[in-house]
Image 1 (cartoon, rainbow, N blue to C red):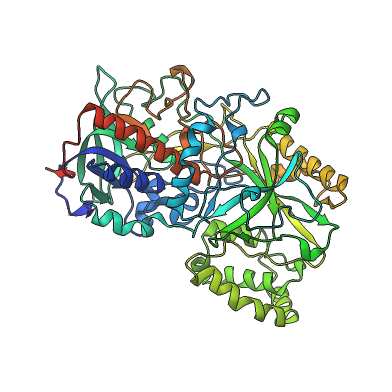
Image 2: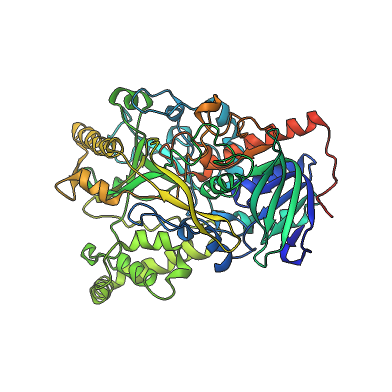
Length: 568
């Protein structure tokens, strides 16, 4: 059942077995899984069913460095479906090495293992509609060319590891009917949780305080409470809930808001293959189920330990569409479309900005000349790509064009090491509901940069040793280029980190706030490291694991008490 919170009377009390704050991928998966097990769910979404600026502005940060961090309005979404409404669809899990004790990376000890999480990969793939949980070409028999170019074997460098691509799946749209029809789920939208009330004398949640934009105040009471409203907004809610516990809930270790991590990504080199150009796998593969797959350059687990590398991967990319020197009519047409008034309907702002590139606003006629000079190829390509990108149910994830010179930008995506001084904290400024906003201080270390530099050196050596190609750097100082491109905000990790010991983190191995048995966090804020993977796939993996744990807890204490959520 879907309920507009603005239609409820001020002071109403909502009761349920489980209250879930946030209706993004984690919240929706948790709600559906627990409802199947018979539990009554109150699912709270701060935004509306669709996007509204007023609801979105509730999540704006007070202070952040725009050279290192994107505005919260670009990297999060307050609406049904959460950030899945604007993501690209890339699905990739963490690697076994991410859960190793790595002597060269401090503060990186996960209290869970890869083997504990991998059994949930297939169910996560099912929710994302991204096929079988196979992330290596050697596990896929119907794709015959295993290497990215001929005669390039998997050794310390691998080119057979994969990303899988979702539709991309908007969880709000895809699971709307299931949420609406469920007799066990009450989805309250336009309702923002503003405080977690706890008992003064024990670690127990008494209720959630929530408000609508019209300032109606409601209270939610449940047996279990799950915070699934995105990493930084979840951390913010814990911080502002400081009436009984100065410093906020979960700050017993002093680490709430600390170890904020994302990723490093960008292009510092082009890869020149010396193999036959028509044999290069430059775009996407498709498996027997027509799922889009993308190959990456990566390193073996053993090599990362041996060389003291962070987890760094790379894939063949495209030049920024906004630079007309690429000479491609296809890329120039893409630039003109994305940079037009209709561009906002073609891709999310962050994706548009990445594709267009910086400082490319004065080349309109150069792009027009590229299109005219390459008119035949452009007209032949555009209709087919347009259908596959915007009309097909399973959309091609990105635009790739074959390079006759067999030269492609090499786009890297790298782990950021945990850094105590990289953090979020509360500002004095408040939002429209009276909640204090966040100050964001995302910081990178020289170790982050050095690892990306050395990864490129190892890739170059590997290509040259096998006489398949080489790297050519875009600038004289690769490290300076990486610093210039460093920044994130889209992959928010670490601010409620998981730990075995209470004094080393915020949540325990089951994502309980340490010391509580009724308050859980379901977001990438619990991640101890950021790995090479974007967060979305693993968020759902952890949500599935949490659903299993919560169901057992609820059944053991006593069976479901409510047939559905109750409003009184």
